[in-house]
Length: 257
Ligand code: COA
Figure 1 (spheres, rainbow, N blue to C red):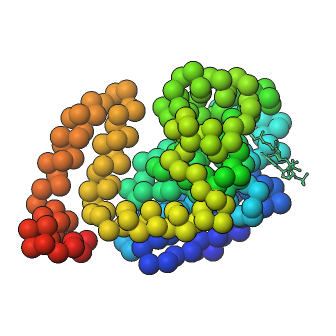
Figure 2 (tube, rainbow, N blue to C red):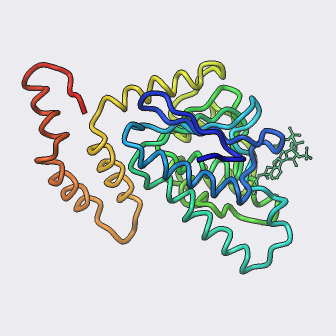
């Protein structure tokens, strides 16, 4: 598939998505959100892709937010639709994808940009990254899951501080609050994520998909996560991946999933 606002690349078991609107600091307009949905879907269906790495083009920004120029004249119902459709098409879609997604946060991750990074399963930031949810400075609140996922990651107090001040925090601060898993030098960001991707790719993709589902269940009010875990655990038995993983261990060799 060809895209106008993003670039997709494949290398062995890794899929790379680069949001490519550097002149607009990779702001998420409607077209970009649709292309991201399509690219994630395409990569998730591609058996060879075991891990997806998403980053922003240029050295300045991961994503500087939703494209403000697109919604400046929206009314209440259009605003609601924007949040609902965006959450469904991209943010919840990424969070529940079977293939693990690593966000390589290479600069500003603001508003929808931070919300996208938070929807990913793992976040690695470059040392120049700046993160925040500045929506209240626009007379808005975060609408792509930010009020829910930020407290899950950093706790209610820090989340409310970030959301009400609308301020940005640096990579080290983000790391100290659990918002990102690692901070690395900017020039090492992608190779660091690739190495993590290689490690993940050695494991059973079936088991990884089940683990994502079970962990996500912890954050859903209507389900009992422990029951989801028991069910998913049981379903692993008898799968090809389980047979291969256990056989490899007993035969003292590396599994080939
Ligand atoms: N939506 C639309 N356009 C955006 C954007 C966004 N969220 N963020 C940046 N841009 C555009 C700017 O309008 C500018 O376009 P122009 O050159 O056509 O005028 C271009 O990207 C470069 O941004 P600029 O503001 O000149 O860069 P800067 O280095 O001075 O500042 C930021 C960087 C990130 C601090 C600043 O761009 C900013 O505050 N962006 C908005 C962040 C935000 O509120 N996000 C939440 C949206 S809900």
